[in-house]
Length: 193
Image (tube, rainbow, N blue to C red; front, side, top):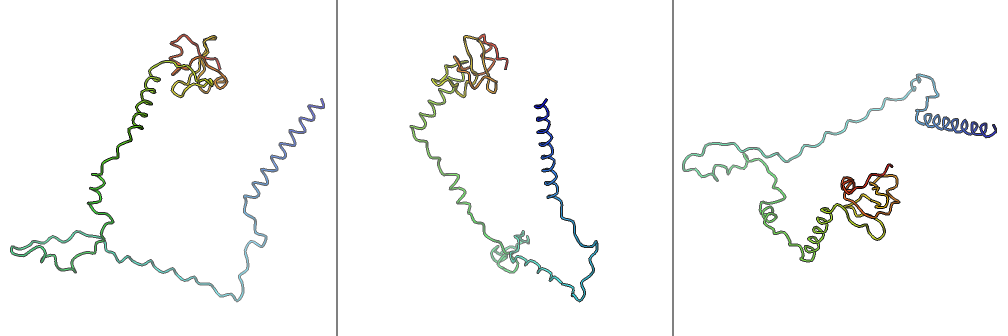
């Protein structure tokens, strides 16, 4: 009886404390109510304040490139003479790059990988291919399964554990399978939890 009363008192105290904390948090989020009258009387003798307008942003002096007017060139008249009039030409800004820069990037040969790194990559790929082709592998000395074969199996009980299972972290496997289907094909059954 005393325990029940004590538990009830603790529960009521916790609920009251939580409610008080929520109320304080809600009060802190509300804006403070004005303490003066609803409408303030105008201030006597004060002049209205005028705020100067912001200056308009300056227009850019660069004119966007436009298509040059196409006019017929009469025979005998050279193109240079026809377009020599600079008043008719729009101002165009030059790009930061040139077409030669792009061709240099496209023509640059890729640096070959050093032979030692190539051999190591080939060996790792062959090991991964071999590991992926076998349905099971032996676990490591510390009792962990490799990333390619994550399913842990105990042969004495004929049970396998999948990652995320209840006993998966503490199971020291006898074999590591590539997936649950491979373990079932070998005559094992899944763990209940």
